[in-house]
Image (cartoon, rainbow, N blue to C red; front, side, top):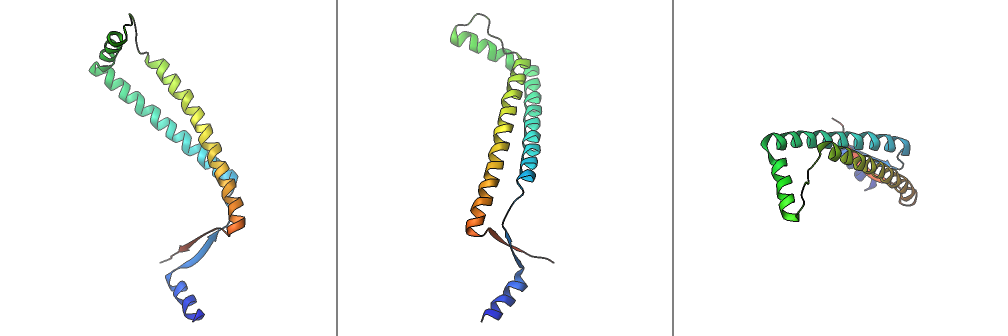
Length: 124
């Protein structure tokens, strides 16, 4: 019976176990991925800001905030918003990278106890 089960596993694909992940590789990949996402979000924000400025939405929002809260000269400054978004994004990139590395270390520790993640590799 065991031989037939082994034969079924061989036909369906090779069973592999992921026991450890390289923490440095996970950290480097996470850092590059998070920086790429930050750049993508910043570029999208700039495009939306320019579109909103051209359409007059920024001026309308300034006027609405002045009226709603009783301010005399409230004005959104795009460069300050971009700098703030960039700095907050850098903090989030750092936090995300550290969290991913910590999760990789935890995976390695748990993998030592339970034996790793099993998956099937199917070739054609």
